[in-house]
Length: 368
Image 1 (cartoon, rainbow, N blue to C red):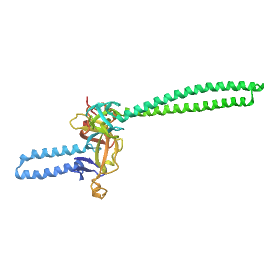
Image 2: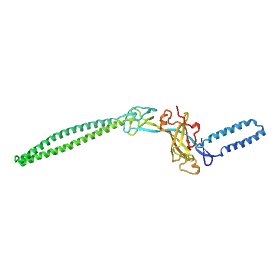
Image 3: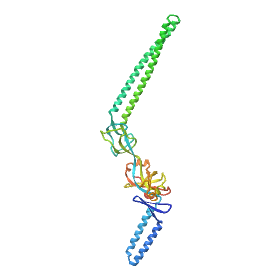
Image 4: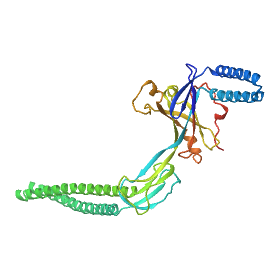
């Protein structure tokens, strides 16, 4: 049961069995007046009927009622509700299809970033690696062959250039015919054309090497992706495959809990949620754990949860419940990861005003 007090009209509210009820009260004066009238009535009965033995019981009853009432109303700027601790869940999946060769973790293990979780084997990927490697070797051999041809053609061009130079001198002295001179010029031009063609062939062969190398790197990357690693540190919560399973691309292998993202969701009606500022200071107390953890209101849902949906009569609006997220600081969550476990039940407390002091039982107290 959740009690809270409106600061506008002095009304005490309570939530019981999913319903939002209002109990009109005039604070302690009403309680004392009620007790006073009741005691006066009983006193008359005692005087008339001599039931003096009931007087101590009446006094004790009023004292218990006063204590309970006072306790429930002394911290009117602090609201609370119960919930469960939750962690951000990360589902680690395989990018490619394959057969599970190894599963290296078990449920409950803590893993660091890049820890190897499982390995897959794939004959198809291994064939791709071998094929890409062979293509790269062939391309490299083609480059060497064309470069050798280019070197030989360069020698032929150099010879043709010398012949043209000599022919030019001979023709100047009328020692060779014009046709012979033209023939040597044609040989030079052919050598230059062949050299240019071989130069293009070398560039194409080098491009083939680069393409084969890219294919080989891609095949190696696929092979590396068959080694499934943790994307970040966390605790293994589910192991979803076993050795020998054949899985499809995108199939989940392991589920991790991000221990840096610990939170609890509480539910409050609209009158309370309207008073909760974002980033408000909060406290979390878990069942069976003698500790008080700090938290912050990091999120308030804009969608109310109620039945029936989208009904907003005056009566139904009192049943609207909004989700409020209390986030434990990541450094605290990481430091006390051995104490904090998903599904732990407990209570969350939210301070509506920063000027309100936390009571002694809600002062920070972390595990030793």
